[in-house]
Image (cartoon, rainbow, N blue to C red; front, top):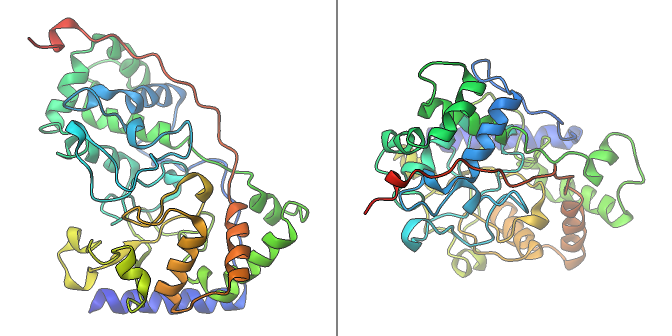
Length: 343
């Protein structure tokens, strides 16, 4: 019951703070980096190559980019992603855009940092299917063309390691921020940046109660130390028709990590940036449109069915959270040695 009490106390505290003064915050233009992994151009260059390289997978067909398309919304528009051998995962792929500003990663918050998160998918049997992390880095070590990039990023010596590969991927992901949305410009003083409907939606967002959970620059909750997540129960009001329609209780959420019954149906609060690019919605990718997502969330979390005009206004406000995407180009990867191809 401790987790439930903490969540309830946190929601009450956030609700009281929002009622006093909505803490509108613009998106930072630079992501903070940990002391042991400062962001450098060499790391970003290497990390980008590894992010796009399908040789991180057992079949040579799945890369980070496969599920996190940075040429668009940073995910794959599937309800759940497809990994090696056509296997389907159990959860919707979260966007990689702005993920560098989250305090925990994955829907259940099981990774504290981008570096830790980068080591998960390669050894997931459904996603990239490598036997273990040793097998992952073995494949990279056999591609001699990678060594100069590792040495440029990390110095000479035994630097082609899984830890350094994860550091490089994390460094690249810290460049994936989308600031300067209409909302950001409005918050920073340009009152012409939002339409009248978007301003109405901004007010409705607070009045309805959305900001109880969705606040901060990402609208994923208040700032937290790395490794400390903003978690809520979803749905908090399970007696509504959307629960069965979208099968929202099948996945037990954070319970899969903690095995604590109090964590059933508990999830990290997702960010609301760039939602026009990230359909379908919810942890299982079951909701296709933004208006339907607003209806599902307000019914499930606030216990209310909104009038259509409120839904339309809130959707217009959410659309204003779409920022500017930094230009992305496909990297040139080192060639595959013939001995890696097998018989």
